[in-house]
Image (cartoon, rainbow, N blue to C red; front, top):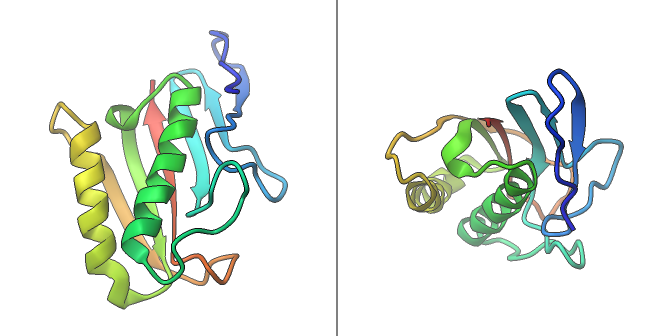
Length: 141
């Protein structure tokens, strides 16, 4: 279940939800301090099992990853509409088009204002071989 943040100006609060995968290492799913909410990098994992999903399919991995990010945003009292910046990490340049298409549809659906968040996309090696994409987010609540 989500650990709902308490309004405490200046206090850093760990966010946790079973609607997104548990962190595998030493970090929080998300942290909120005042009006800022940072979501740790998420991948295409099943929240219940931790299994990496959709091997080789960056479009489906992007959608699963964004659903995980959104679950943590929701746990902190935010949604995609509140995101200022997404950072997308891809393993293959050739996957950019499919990721961008899936990302664009998801963000448009969840940003009714039409003001899309900023985004940076970089190409990297990711911590698990099955991951084609990882995404983090910064939101203002």
